[in-house]
Image (cartoon, rainbow, N blue to C red; front, side, top):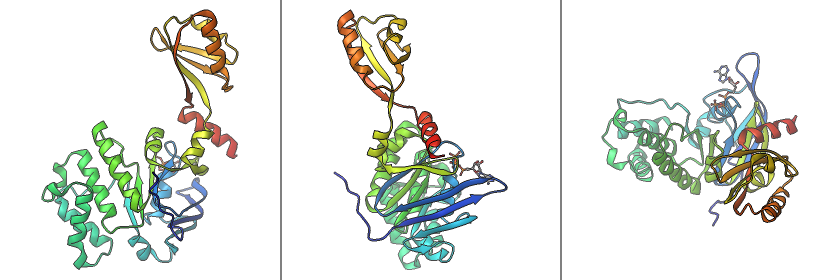
Length: 314
Ligand SMILES: Nc1ncnc2c1ncn2[C@@H]1O[C@H](COP(=O)(O)OP(=O)(O)OP(=O)(O)O)[C@@H](O)[C@H]1O
């Protein structure tokens, strides 16, 4: 069941945002509006412009051109008020490893300009949500990577912001930590709008309802995850056969381009995009006794999708 809530006004509005570090543009003419809670994925390959966009949204970097509004507040004109509404987990958070979890979170709350009287309760609540209460007195340097990341998330939500921005929050986590941290992010998305960057397609699939793709500093796709899935055309089929033919026989099927045996009975067949190839494979299997056990269309690789979308957007 969908738990996202539609908000009355846009929590984040980005208008004609551009930035250049030196001569060349890192992002160019970005426009985006978010007005719902839930996790929104910012997907792009390395150097696409994700961090630049997020750093500007969070007020860490001043844009060369354009505007960012948080809850209607222009971040350039009302930086302090806007900051109260944003939580940010940067890619490389400043880690105060010699502070305890409690000390660090209290400090983070002060930076968010919270009322002194409210800080203690806020620290307790954030710790509870991120399940780190039992580490309150522990030095951050003595926490594992996964727990450090939870502390990072706790500082980002300590002041109950409407917008939480997370720059590649699961980078470097082991598989168990990954599952836990993703669960936490999903929970946070129930009450807040979470803008999360990643270059891992499967992660965006798992977490997000909407996806914004950025490539070469420009938005090349922005729609729901469902629309994105529909957009992606399969370009290979994965199949298992009890009695498979040789690769050249498979490659001779109309539309097939290359057969790659993964095991003796499992083969990936690349094709030119005509999805009806599955019917031709099934028919050939019945005719020649290949004893097809399983056949699945596979969506294109992320890199292919980037390439396809980038070409179309120019
Ligand atoms: N401080 C900087 N000075 C100069 N150029 C920069 C700086 N930071 C980023 N860039 C350049 O701006 C472009 C966008 O970089 P950005 O870090 O925003 O991309 P990204 O999508 O976050 O990549 P990654 O996934 O690697 O973090 C890249 O070409 C990058 O080389």
